[in-house]
Amino acid sequence: MMRPGIARKAPTTWLVAASIASASLAAVLSGVIGASVRAPIAPVTAIPEARTAASELPPLDRGGSDDGARAPIASAPAAEAPAELAERGTAIDARVRAAGLAAAIDPEIFRVATFDVHARAIARTLDPETARDLARLAADVGAPAAERVAAAAILRGAPGQAIALPGAAVGFLRDAWTARESDPTLAAAAVGSLAAFGNREDRRALLDESATSSSSAALARAGLSAARGDDAALEIAAAAADDRDPRRAEIAVSALTAIASSDDRELTEMGRSRCAEALARALAAKTTKDASSARLLSALAALDPRKAERPLLAAIADASTSDAGAQSAASALAAGSSTATNVRADLERLRDDARLSDRRRTLVAATLLRSSPDR
Image (cartoon, rainbow, N blue to C red):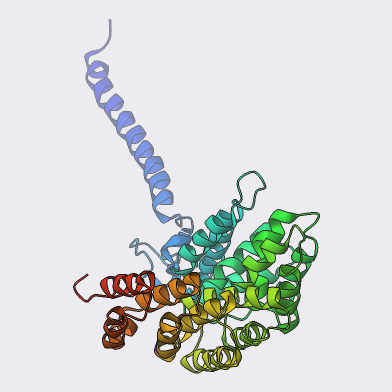
């Protein structure tokens, strides 16, 4: 039988032991938790897209001791400068545009007219930086040939950009045209840019090729019509006024008319005037009013409508002018409505002139109708 005194003390002893155990456990837990609180937080890596250095942010205050309680956040790598990012962006944009157009330089689907229309459409959206990147792409020997040709074609139609291709790019276009027998599709896509960015010798070679009966003569004529600038126009005007080689002169007149009729060939008013003077002298020297005279008149009207007014009227009134020549002169007058308005009284006089044939008077009446301000 247990003694009463011992029975009463047992619970007390157990409670004391339990209290000691609880205190020990609390101490252990406190040490673990405290160590966790005092441990430094791992450095935070800055997100590159934020473009903000993490070191600019204030350090976190965890309220502990200085032993790791205020660990700084790791600094982010230096962000790229905005100018560098913009330059890379325009280079990528230029490459994408050129690659899109280059896809059309495929023998199965390529059409010169469609290719040129697409190139001009892209060119109208260019900014100066992208235009410069396209020029660099055209000169890049490591780029695909089709992309280099496409880049030059886009620049050819860029209004007001006046970008001069690097020599390496022009040389590449020249090589593409020279290799037209082996790769006619690439040559067809390149020839217009060669006429636009090449030199006098390049355009002379194209004109010579145009006058032959070779399979590439038509391509050379199309390319020559894409020439741009005063110097190129004056070269072609000189060939147009030289009737010693009628076939060559005819091709030059056609090319000059196309150049003068386009709004993206960078012809100045001075350039137009000088070309028009060359054609006017050639017309005055002619003793007969043949088909070549009519073509010269059309080119003159495209270059300088006001300067062409009197020669066009004279061609319509001259009975020796062929019906085709008179028709061409009348069309040129009607095409420039302001020009036709300036000579309206003269046209009315010709319409009522009984000395002219009925066919010619009908033509004059139609010209008056087409140029009427009410239309």
